Image (cartoon, rainbow, N blue to C red):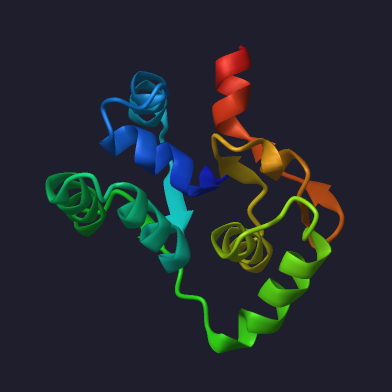
Length: 142
């Protein structure tokens, strides 16, 4: 069985911001995670924006990606309709672009695992049927 998970912006931000309250927990979790992490360019953009307090935090994150820390799934324009559909469906939360791209990636790659600090992923459904298994929160609660 493959160990592959989509990963949201929150864990990345915590990993590269030592003042973040989840920094040590995320670092420990990711050091123990053996599998493939997948994310989107929308998530990468969100993370670099949130790490704008220091250019070295941003470049450390980008270097980590360059060294193979995460796989960036290349969404095409063909997935735009599904992204819009998801954002409209979850408008009451609201679902942002980054989260919508992760749900689409999960659907395309048949991934049920997510690593996120946000609880929104406990509400999102993959293809309207399956809920995500949030590995980070399950680890915190264990």
